[in-house]
Image (cartoon, rainbow, N blue to C red; front, side, top):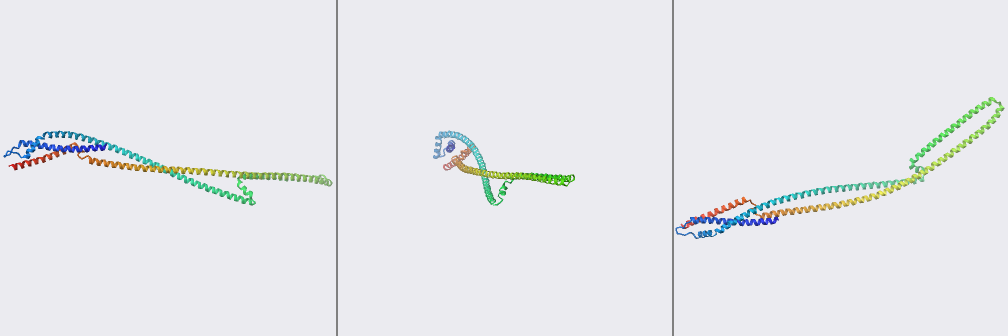
Length: 410
């Protein structure tokens, strides 16, 4: 559309130039005809009775071509009207060009704003992706640190287990196997030791009570014996005393034998109860040791299973994070490539638009002359100036010719 308008303006400018030339020629012819008519009226034949031949030819030419000059004037007026219409069209086209330029500026501004918004969004997305990648790397570092710490803890636990096994083996070879094995169950054995202490305290209390009872019985028996001796000495004579002494000795021996048998029975019962309690304590210690070993082994198996599960879960999670990181890296590369492609395309489109604008301005400057872009007043002033200059030149030439012919013929 713009190219066709430029061609139309070029055609109009060429037609304007031809019309201007015709107008100049017609104006010159009109002036010549007027001068000729004035000369025809004013010039009189010379003394010899004849006019120069070239003046007569000119006058005849002006007389014969008066109708053509009038027709050229009509054509000139029509051409001026067409020129005014074309000038108005040119102004309207200029206004349309201005509107198109304004729209183009608006479109370019909107495009640049969209481009800046896209660039800011892309930068924000890039920063978010960078933050996510940094967070993923930090998580990976933390996971690696956790894995290293878990491996170190596993190695420490393995070392401790090996050391414990070595200690147990060494302790099994030594005499204090039970003491070193039961060292791990001191907390559970403390209650049993407390019970044993309570039992020993009760045993000591019972023994003290038994001894106090025995001493009290012995003291009471001695007191009774002394009393009986005093009574025997006071009441009976020596014979009776001897008989009573023999009976007393027999009774005392019988009582002492009974006391010894009772004491031995109580001692045997106490020893049997003590052995039973000691055997039950040993059995309880063995049972607690077995339960402790079983619980320890079960906890060790649970810990190994949990550690393996955590290791498998950690490996799967690490693979997932690596996949996510690879996907994010691929997306980042794709986005960077798209951004580069869009930037190159935008630069190319801008360069093409700039080149088109320069070509359009060059073609407009080459096709449309300066006179076509002038206003009507400027064109009228230019026409008046050219017509006045041409009229002055024609008048000067005519005056020179007239004066020369007068000098020649006189």
